[in-house]
Image 1 (spheres, rainbow, N blue to C red):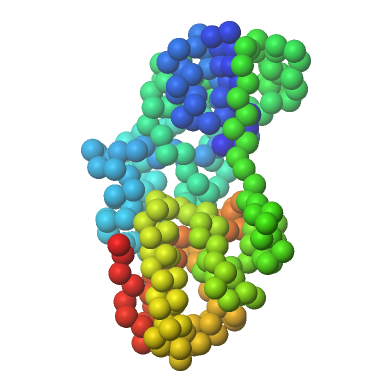
Image 2: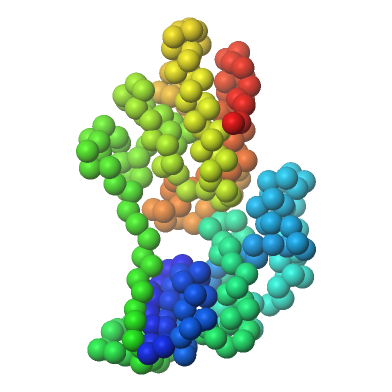
Length: 267
């Protein structure tokens, strides 16, 4: 979430939803400051894990999937602005949602309060754009930068993100890969498993099918697919590397099938 995190004498102000829920269990008060509204998705919907619904449910086109899930979330959660959460300034799926069920519970019971952006820190007081609070602890959940100092010169970086084919294959240096250099709108580890399998097949082809490996290297050098699945992600450096899980999962399999490769098998 786009804000800072604080705690107060047994009073806490937090930016990360999970940390806020932990703070709410013990602190006198906990505050979450956010700069923009986010779509909130519970971890379970009607007793089914949300990611299982996304991955195993009906594969709908985006124009139908988005209003379907918006209606489902509204039915399941109601109007979350009544809990103090700002209305999102973007459509569902255009940014990472907030996957949390406990936060709504604590907001409804007054154990966590939503605050806008932090304007200034004044000793033990945190001044938000709508007022101030006395606090004991500030937790800064500011995220992280992608950095590989020992190898950065071998990658072409733009806005803090390396330019990699399928977010994996270095276009200039053969057999230099970057596993995990992507933002994903679903479970990441199943996709990492799939990507690792594609890398393994490519390395296997170098020894056993060099013609097919050379054809794939042609794709690495010049193929620039759009892997957003039709979603217009937010225009930020973070979202520059954001891909749609289904689009990314399906594209390598389709391209390698075109080259005559065996279908990619998940471990």
